[in-house]
Amino acid sequence: MSPAVDVKTLVIDGIDVSARADQTVLEVARENNIFIPTLCHLDGLSDVGACRLCLVEVKNSPKLHPACVLKVEEGMEVTTKSDRLLHYRQTILELLFAERNHVCSVCVVNNHCELQSMAQSQGVTHVRLPYRNPKLTVDASHDRFVADHNRCILCTRCVRVCDEIEGAHVWDVMGRGIDSLVITDLMQPWAESTCTRCGKCVNVCPTGALFDKSKLGSDHPKYPDFVPYLNMMREVR
Amino acid sequence: MTKIKLATVWLDGCSGCHMSFLDMDERLLELSSGFDLVYSPLVDFKVYPQHVDVALVEGAVSSVEDEHKIRHIRKHTTLLVAIGDCAVTGNVPAMRNPFGPLPILERAYHENASIQQQTPCKIVPALLDQVRPVREFVDVDLYLPGCPPSADTFFITLTDLLAGRMPDVASLTRFGA
Image (tube, rainbow over all chains, first blue to last red; front, side, top):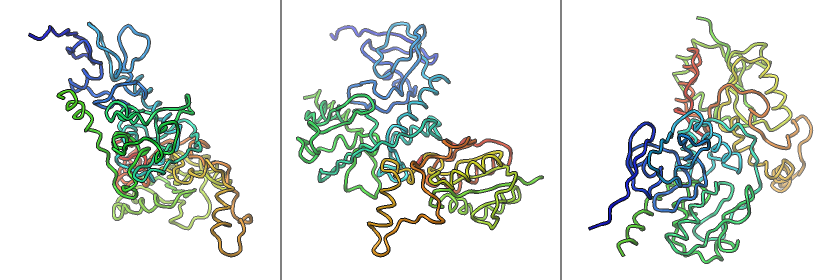
């Protein structure tokens, strides 16, 4: 007999839901068809709460909580939609656009970009902050892939998929705050790194920061849905 | 029905937004009963009128002339609409910002010119240090992102504006669209 499952009951947007004690608010919300916007979260990877788009309100808590790393609690009352949350989500997206050089019109993943479609779904029609236009590098040393830091939002999906799924841990983050960069190995050019050429990082990248050279000038959809299947295969083994 | 006074303005952009505006094709005739085009690169008026109801502004602000124009236009316009990614975000013209204008002029007029290498400095307006979106100079009342915004986006937006409504832009278009 399997051990008794620890079940919690909580309320999300006025709907009574039940969850396992080890679940996050984001997981439970999605199971119940309650949409919470995310960028750094990807099914099958660990959660880090990097992008803050999934911020939700919790009754009797003065602060906002990222739903992707918020564990459920008995009797919790969560609100996922409010004017306050929309204001923060729009501002977060505007900060992402202002921070680096996102030029959708000339981007290889135009029409397939999660940042672009998220901006539209959250009603962002312009950026109220001054653009920084920093000078950033493009690493095109690899024969198959390119890393364009102008388009990186530091979601760290590439870092996590390379470590947790591929097991190579080629990607990591260097620097602090606004100077942070994703790097391969100890900031070696991608071509000279220990990259296994699997391409997982390219497919989980939500923007055009990591892309396939062969897709330049053509349609470049990304296919990040493979991660949960690889996890399932690993569990079976 | 009184016609509204409509202007369209072309700052630092490729004119693609104006092409998309023209792409409304026969629907332009339908709309034109509601407006008079009083200033535009598409017509031959040289002076921006004292009063304009709606101005559609394409392009980023890149030169001293652009800046002078947009400040003047704002003063004489009731509803200023930034059309296209250049006006809304800076877009492609703003890609020179990490380098500044001098290396760009050097590249265009010296490195890539086979004869008579010289940077134009007479008659043409001086470039600003940074290309900035319209909203960093003047208040903007409505933003139509897109590169360019589609003809449908223009049609629905203008239909709404002529009827005195503000359109729901996010349902029509987006950055890069």
